[in-house]
Image 1 (cartoon, rainbow, N blue to C red):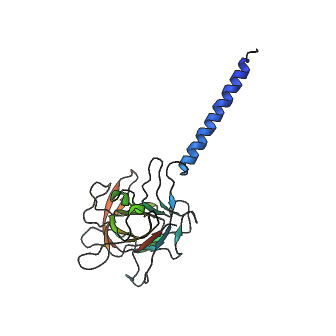
Image 2 (tube, helix red, strand yellow):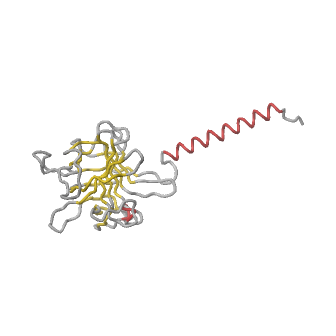
Image 3 (spheres, one colour):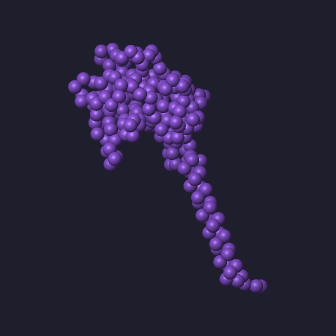
Length: 248
């Protein structure tokens, strides 16, 4: 029986090594795309609009769509998902128009500053690249799909947007233990409107709270990002919105 030559051994070892590296790189790429673990769930996001932006202050919602209808995951670069993950899935709702799209934005209206809050009105209203996340996992294990039919839960909401080369965010989060707990702000209210045969929620509305004076609006803290990654406060603003999310 002939022994393999050193050259053959080296060639065989190199081939096995290359195959292993290729498999590892493919696995990493697949994981990054959500192929392993818990993939994102695509959803349809509707940021409802009402009335007119003008005259000042207008009757529009202060967070609403850009006039181009619903947002669909993967269309014009939009990400509209219930968030997945590698080891577990948060299933929080995310709408992101900041990734690759150049055609979809979200209208942000800052014409309702809270008096005596130090509010810095960086603009009146603008359609801007925006990322919205509603973190119901902080309130309920399983997040959006786990909300019982016709039940409402209180969930922190973060609305980040880009303007003039700077990142800003409107924080509506008054939940102890969160990364941002601002007692004067209000969480969003998320209601389950439909469920499937497995009692998993498949349709939701996201609304502000009803204040003591009867107005339906949230107080949000505006923050400005610095180059170091820290956030500085720019005062409080009243926010109105009416979102619907459906799966599919």
